[in-house]
Every structure is written in C-alpha cells, then in structure tokens.
Length: 318
Image (cartoon, rainbow, N blue to C red; front, side, top):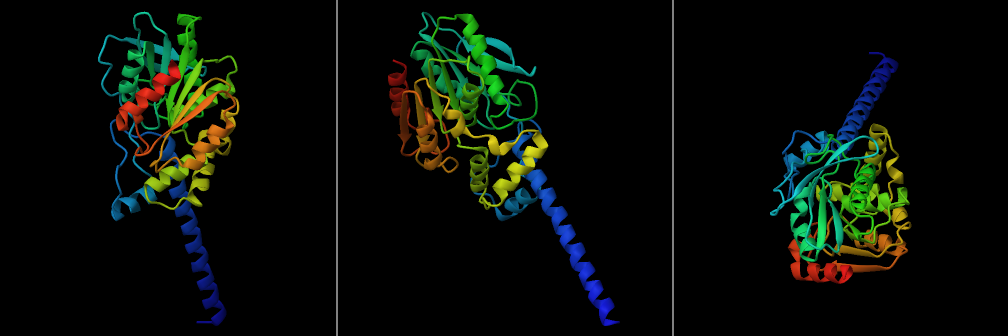
C-alpha cells in the first residue's frame, strides 16, 4: 500500500475514534446530569454504601438510579391534607398539624431525594415545643406534582407558597422555616427572591454552598472524581433545565438573611464540607448561631443526637 494512503487511513481511524469517544463522553454527561435532576419510577432508592466496581461502571455510563421519592408514614396524630400552589402553577402536597394555644408555626422542607414524611420526628418535637407544623412535599416528591427537581432553584417558589399559606392563617403568628440540605438552600433562595417573605426565624441544616458543591458531594459519595465532572455536569444540566446552575449559590442567597438563624452541620458529613458551612454562616447578616454535631454525617440530627438537637432548637425558639 502506498505510504501516503496508509497514513491517511490511520488519520481517518484516529479521527473516527476520537469522534466516537466524544459522542460517548457527551452521552455520559447527558445521563449524569439528567439523573441528577429527573426521577425514575417511583420507589426506587438511591444506592447506599460503597458501590461495587460493576455498579460504579454502570453509574459512570448511565447515571445514578434516582427513583421518585414516595411519601413515608403520615404524622402520628390528627392532621389536615393541604394543597398549595406555587407561582408557576405547580401543585404541592402538605400535612398541617395544629396544636392547642400555638406559639406559632414551623414549616418544614425536606432534602434532596426525600419527602415530607422524612421529617416526622422533627415535626413531633416542634409540636412539643408548642408550634403548629406544616410538612411540605417539594415538586417532584411525594404527592406533589412533577418528576423533576431543580436542587433548590425552583423549589424557592414552593417555600414561598407554603409561607403565604401559613401567613394567611394568622397574620400575627410567629413563623419559622426549617429546611434540611436542599430544603435549607430552597429557604435561603426564597428569602433572597421574595422580600415580602419575612419569617421570624430560620433553622437550616447542612445546606450546600452552591450547585457545583452539591455536584461534587454527590460524586464523592459515589467514589467518582469530582473534577472536571462536577463543572461539566452543572453545565450540561443548565442546558437541560433552562437555568444557569453556576449561579445557584447559597452563600449569595444567605447575604439577604437578616432574621435570627440557627445553622446546624454534622462534622462527619461527606457531602457538605466545613468550608461550605462556614461560608454560609459568615454570609448571614442577621443574628445567628452555628451548632455542630461531632458524630453526624449527612443525616437527621435529631436522630443522631436527640438531646443535643432538642436543646439547641428549644433554646433558639424560646
């Protein structure tokens, strides 16, 4: 074969190989980003614990299974089923439990891949402290509309809808917003977006500092490299979901907070770092307190250390 022809054949093969790898890489990115924000069939659970080598290969190629969260047990007391409507028309499901002679109302917002039933224990303790409780299913979770989560971006509308409903029940009551993880970020974004939303207090647990940080935390939990995947996933997700994920920044949102805030974090958290927590805490401009839990990971603190959690929350709400 003529040397020039042989060289052209090799160049062509290399070009086709590179093109194929680019297509494969783009497919992987699309799947990773899509599964981060879109739910699969209801009831499928996120994987827990260190994944096997085979599972890691599958997750890397096809994305992590992300089943739509379904509601856990209802409250263990009489409750009302409430339907809220966000500004964009999304219907949201909530459980409302009034108490006798309430001191106010605590509205509870769950984290990523969770639902209102996951906050039953926290709600119980708030009621023991004399507060009505409203537990809300974010869009895409539980009994609410949709099959999609924006990791706290659009969920700020859900926070506002819940706040407005509680406010209308009694305009003179004390309103406290409780959020964990994505729920905490949704609360912070809601405060930034809606100046008329003026609760008397915030209790925030393990909020991530930005969508980039949340993506890094998710990759860490799956033993996958954080970079450049985190930035690429956020970029791809931005194209898919119609909002610029690099601007989804809880530290920036926190600068709008001027109400008393209790920020809590687990010192063993593999997803949210101390750096993120301290950055959010520093940005909050109102009266604030930071409480940490030495043995807690990314989990419910009332379950990890009930006495510490109850004392911290009771002192904040006194």
